Length: 253
Image (cartoon, rainbow, N blue to C red; front, side, top):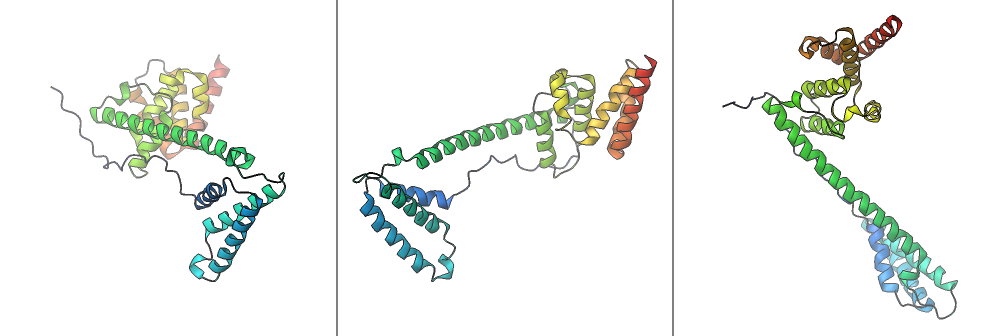
């Protein structure tokens, strides 16, 4: 029976929190006005506007009400509806369903809600994959696992959980996979995208590993541990060395 390997890594921070929709007092204020104004004609809206203006003047006298975002939004909406009905044929009553501004806002809110839901699902996916990689690390089998699309974000989540601690084993795993074209890095587009998703030390480590593998085919990765140390401490130098080896290889071929 194999005993899981214990680690001395720091205890992980709580999982990534799902994005939360912010409270929008101005939006609430506009909705209140529209519900109240539904079915009103121009005369009724004008009266409501005067009432809102009176309330705004009263509120301006009190310091704690002077910065009332919702109150200002309500007043602005009454002013907009007053202008809307003043320009409409006589006898027109307000109908939010026929208000182009309202319909545009509803469409934008629906799109924002869809984006929010997608962000929640992505956060959950990242958290679940981070749990999986952490378990593989504890079992000592991370090196036998191929990376998947999106694991660059999972790396960031694991780093966040560890309080910003640079996790050398995860970085080395990604660098090896990138150099050897493992997992989703078989796709050239994924390798190209990695340049904007992974930090310079990981990219330099991968580039150096790739060139050293060309220089010594079949070499055991354990023999190239120095590449990780060089890339971590001197990523620019490691990148320069990888570029030099690539030029030398091209000249020899």
